[in-house]
Every structure is written in C-alpha cells, then in structure tokens.
Length: 549
Image (cartoon, rainbow, N blue to C red; front, top):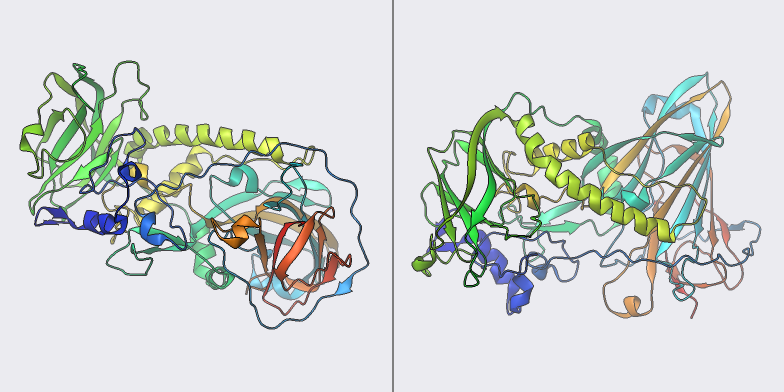
C-alpha cells in the first residue's frame, strides 16, 4: 500500500480499531512498543463479538491442562427411544465455534448406489478432573457398519473433521476396520472462514482480519462445493522453476550500551511492486513512507546471551526484478520515528552495528528450504508441548495418537497459502501483503481436514469402520453461558457426498454429571434417555451441555 500524508493506510485501519487501548496492548512479544503507524501485526484471531479489536490483540491460546482422575462408575443406559422430529433449527451461536461433527464421505459417486451404512455416534463426556466436571471435551466413537450390496470393490473413503494443524495434537482420529488400525492420509482444506475488515464485515478492499465460520450451514455449503475437497487433494504449486534472489542477514552485532533501548537493524531496498514480490522471514517490522520504491524491514539485534527467535537468521526473498541495492542501517530503538519524519535524529544513530549480508540466486523452492525449517522447528517444539498436554488428560490406554506434520506437509501448506492468499497470489489478502512469512496463519487456523483411507469389500460383504477422536466443545469467552460452563456440540448429518445411511443411532455417556441445556437431540438425562434413533433426513442436530448444577 502506498503512504498518503505520511500515514500508512493499512496501519490507519488497524489503529482506528484500537481506539483507546492501553500501551501494553500493542507491545511485541519481546516487550517493545509497536509503533501504531507500522503494519506489523501479531498473529491475531477474530473474536466473534469483538472483531474490531482482533486486528491488534494477540489471542494467546493457552491449553487447559487437566489432571487425570479415575473415571466414574459405569453409566446407566436405556433401550433406544425415538428422536423428536424437529424441523426448525434454533441452535445458538457460540463466540468460539469449533465446527460440527461431519459425516463419512465416499470417494466416488459411482459407488454410492451399492454402498449403504448403519451409523452409531457416541458422545463420551469423560471426567478428567474431579474439580472440573464441565464437558469441554468429548470422546467421539463414530461407527459405520458399511454394506456392499453389489459386486466386490475397493472403496475410497474420507473422514472429514474440523481442526487446525496445531490442534492435531489432540484432534487426530484413530480409524479401525473390523478391529484393525488403518493408516489414513491427511489432506488439508482451505481456511474455513473469511478475510474481513476491522468492522468484521466482508470488504474486498480491507481483508485484514480473520473471521471463522460461525454456523453449520457454512460448513455444509463448503463441503457441498466439490472444489473444496478437490483443492485439498491437489498438490502445492511447483516452486522449483520459479527463480528468486535471496538476501541473508546473519551474525548481527552492535556495541551494547544501557542507553540503547532496543538496538535494531534496518534493511532498505528499492522495489517496483509491479515487477517484483517480496517475502521476508525474521523481520519484526515493515515500513514504506512515500510513493517511491524504497521499502524498509527491521529486526531487533540480539543482545549477548539472548537466544534469538530465528537463531539470528533473517531473509528477504525477491521474486521478479531484483533491488539495485540493499542499505543496512541501525538505530537504538525500534519503530519508524527516524524514517517517517517524526524524529529524524533517530535514523541510523547506532554506530558499530550491522550484520553479515549475502546475496544468492536460487529457486523459490530452495529459498523456502532456507527459511521454513526455522518455522518448522518452532512448530515441532510447540507441538511437543501440546502432545504432553494431551497425554495429561486423554483417556489412558485408548491409543488415540497425536499427529505432527512432516516437514513436507508443513512446506506444502505454506506454499499453497502463499499462492492462494499470501504475497505470491494475484491479489494478496491485506493481512499478508507485506510478505512476512512469520505472520501467516497456516497451522493455527481452522480448516476441514480429510482422513483418506481405502477398504475392500466383497460381494454383499459388511465391514465395521470405527473412528475415535476427541472433540472440543464450542464456547463463549464471557457472558452467561461462559459463567455456567456451557459447551456446544453439533452434528452435520447430510452433505451431497456423504455415505447413505439406512439407520442412524446416537448415545451419550454422561456419568450422571451433566445437564442438558438446549438442543434438538432429544436426550433426557433426568429420565435416563441416553440413546436415540436419529432421522436420516434432518440436516443438523445440536446440544448444549454443562456440568450438573
């Protein structure tokens, strides 16, 4: 974006939403104050009802560590009772909607005629902490008795589920066929949400914020569009034949002084944005201060004894016409006061500071192999922490594994995002147009993930597929439902490509510790109605549950 009247347009949009926020609200992770005229953004999720703040607040997702406790005694069940037929859907929206449980998809519509199934879905609201009986997590057991009424065949199936790549530490499904574990291949759909303005509205001219899908209808519409699954199964664009120029900044140094608040290196380049695209990694800020071609990137110079986030590796990757020069300057503090006319004496006021600079020509694929391993190492470290958390609260001996992306999967996701919404796309989202790879939302955003597997069925053969996974309930950040510990679970029953059902049953295991608050499942825990037959023709079922009052 070009700067007008010495104000960055995108930063104006961001700062407009911040209002009277306190100074701490726009500090970086290192604790430095982020100049509100910069386009630097911390990774921020769009909070459903307070989206105007989402572009400037970092939502830190802190995993809740449960203490493992002994499961209560066996549950009390009844014979199947009829489900109430409700034609209207009055399900409430939650501020954090975790998405519906989704049906099994058959890979080829040509095979649907011969394939039928009986389905049984069990919600096990296990208790993992005696002091906290809120149903924030359910163990799902989704069983399909699949019947082949035609000749012998091999069938490709997809089990879709809503998750981020990060959350695969606890959301990864275990799939069995007749008691034998199947190895499923994962394919990753696009982000299930929209890029919106700071006013939480869809505006093609302002795509700074993220807004996750808030309704089951959005998921149904997405899955009914064949392009979503097709895109998930597609390969990432080939980056090996795309030439780029890479500038590497390493071994940063400065003469440390207590007077220097935050020693910062600034790299200046000249770029014609009509002829070039720029990616960066390891830079904390970006600035452009007039209508010319000059752009600036900055990062904090690590002090002695510090363990820098990127191991002091910083990259500018230029696709297209190269910059005629790279100018390195250093200043005693972060921000852009020395460059936008606010306080020119701060510009390049730090002497005996700099970095080793190297220029190389290579393919985009090779350049990403320089930059992405740094992010992948951080991802793996975070994933190991999530897995330890998962191990502390999951049911013992249930053998549902965690999942960590391979580097190849991780890289493919980044390449897809760079070409679909990032700086390498024809029309980048405002959120990513600076090209800062650090700030791309790749592993942390909700998407539909497809677990793909194949089974062989003989003529008139029946086989049982059992899918076990943990599901997080939807919730509110504040308000009455938050105070009362209410969580929501819902089920999308019908999509165009789902396997046809002859019978659908569901069951809830609550250990006599839950209250049913709202819903159209027609469970009645007080009357011990915990098993139901569901209508095959109803698109959606939902329930809101809480710990027993």
